[in-house]
Image 1: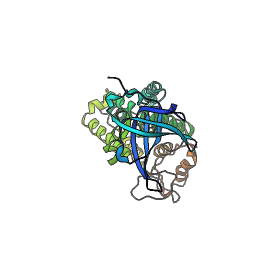
Image 2 (image 1 turned 120 degrees about the vertical axis):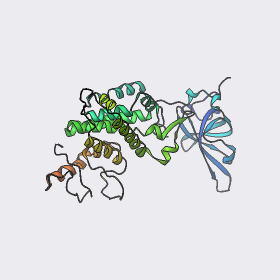
Image 3 (image 1 turned 30 degrees about the vertical axis):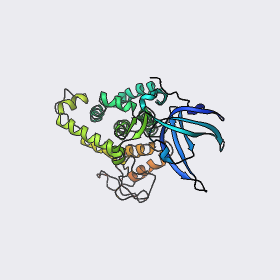
Image 4 (image 1 turned 90 degrees about the vertical axis):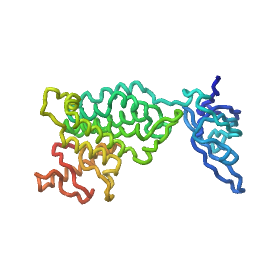
Length: 346
């Protein structure tokens, strides 16, 4: 059976007559001043998205499905607008899904880079955790997973793209601040695990990025942390496998490092909870209190002005009257204690 053809949204020009398949994402019904119903219709294909106009009630239109749309284009506020005359719902079998599948640029390059991320990680506990979570099957799912429902984040490889960008950002922070090897390792593995909740939270349905029920009810942070906890349980139940993944087969006394687990867990739980540049205390929020957690939290938002924030750790260390404590004194400006790192250089 022949497929319904697509006139790509990116190619629409003023004054055209359109008969094309599109994906109708959402429909919002509105009213004119004289009480005439009209709809803003969000349509998509692999080249992008547009808000089309339909003069009529929302009940006439399908949502979250493919549709054969007939209409015309006209200029509206200096943009080409698609005006829908009729809209017939289609099955996914009626269209060529390649017309709606958008993949990140240089997908193969990013997958190759991802495979090399662990090359400079030396901590055995982090190696074991990463390898346990990122099994071959999970890695394949992660590579194709969207990072959200937007035009860029919703692409095949969206999560992969964001993870690779974050790894590059934290690696630059590590170089700039001359971090010790364990902190570097934590930043690399923590950056990847920060996105490990994406496959549980987002998926492609009929090639369209959608948030899953778990994504709505759990969120990315909880999903990523749950994945970490399950991996730790399995590693502790199978010490032989843990030693193999950590490259410690010859050391029967080797065990997972609890301090590393604590620092990694803190990174994941604090990464998206609050910005360390926000000095307002939020009861119940896990604020980033270690160097690696602050860098990760910061790089998830921006890659600029990180030095001023890390100076808080240095000043707290310098003012430390309790050198045997794990945490620094309470910083009245940022309203928190910090996990000590006396090797940090700015």
